[in-house]
Amino acid sequence: MTATPRLGEFQRIARFFAPLAAPEALGLLDDVALIDGPPGEQYVLKTDAIVENVHFLPDDPPRQIAQKLLRVNLSDLAAKGARPYGYLLMTALRAGHDEAWLAEFAAGLAADQKEFGIGLMGGDSVSTPGATTLSVAALGRIKSGTAVLRRGAKPGETIYVSGTLGDAALGLMVAKGGLSNMSPGARAFLLDRFRLPQPRLSLGPRLVGIATAMMDISDGLVADLGHICDVSSVAAKVEAAKLPLSAAARAALAGDASLRQAVLGGGDDYELLFTAPAAAQAALATIAGETGVAITAIGRIEAGQGVRVLDEAGRAMTVETAGYAHF
Image (cartoon, rainbow, N blue to C red; front, side, top):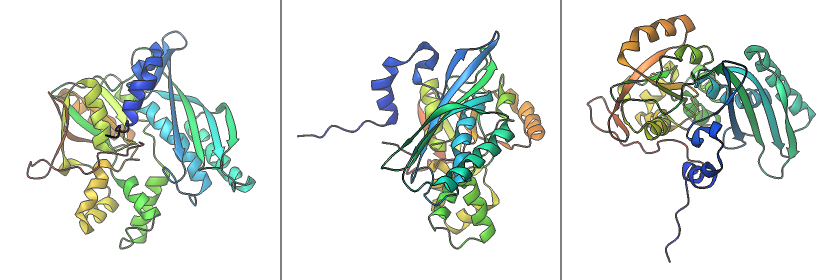
C-alpha cells in the first residue's frame, strides 16, 4: 500500500486554511492581511512565531530572543512598505525560564519598542511541556491601496535584494560550533546576524510606488523568490556571482565553496527581496544612498515558472535546499 505524501506548508495552507480566509486575507497568498483603518489608510496585519531549537537556541540570550521575535514580524511590515504601529505577544514557555530570564526578555522588547516607536497591545502567556514557542502579531499602517504585495512581478523586471545574504545561516553554524577556522571577529559578526535581524523599516516605505512585488527573505532566497514567482505567474533567473556578501561570508565561502548553498537557501536573512522595472535603477541608487541600506540587482524576471540559479559561467546550478521546510 502506497503511503500518502505529507503536505508541505503551503499545500496545507491552500487545502485547509485558504477556504476559511476573509477577503482581507488576500487569499492567504501573501505574508499579511490588509484591513481598512482611518480614512485613506489601511492596517497591515502580520503574525510570525519562533520556536526553540528551530529559530533560536536554548542558550541564546533572552534579550536577543525577544528582539528577534519582534524584528522578524517588523521585517514583514517593511516588506509591504508599512510603518509599525504596535503588536500582540504570545509566550508558551517551558520550565526553566525564571524571573531573571523574563526580565531580560522584557528588556529586549523594551529596547526595540523604543527604537521602532511601538508598544505592546496585549496577548497571552501559557506554559508548555515542550519547546518554548513565542509569537507576535504585528500591526502596521500604510496609505490605502499602496501595500507592495507578492503578486506584481512582470517579465523583464529586475530582481533586487537589500543588505547582504547568507550571514544568518552561517551564523547558525557558528552558534552550533561550526566555522571554527574563522577569525573571532568574523564569527561574532555572523552570530549577531543570526540572533539580531535588522528589519529594513527605513527602506521598505521608500519602495512603495517603485517595487512591483516584494517580500522579506525568511525561509531562503530561492524559496522566497519562488513564492513571488508562483503568485505572479512568472519565472526568475538569479546570477549567483551577483549575490551581495559580507566580508565574513566571503571569508567563509573562500574556505568552503559548498557554503554558497547556505547563501541561496539558508534563510533567516530578513532582507527585502523585490522586483522593479529597469527604469527604477537610478531612483533605487538614490534611495540606497539616503537610507544607508545597500540594494543589489541579482537577476531578472522572465516568462515561465520556477527559479533558475546560474553560476559565473552561465550554467544552471543545483540548489540542494531552496529554503527551510517546516513540514
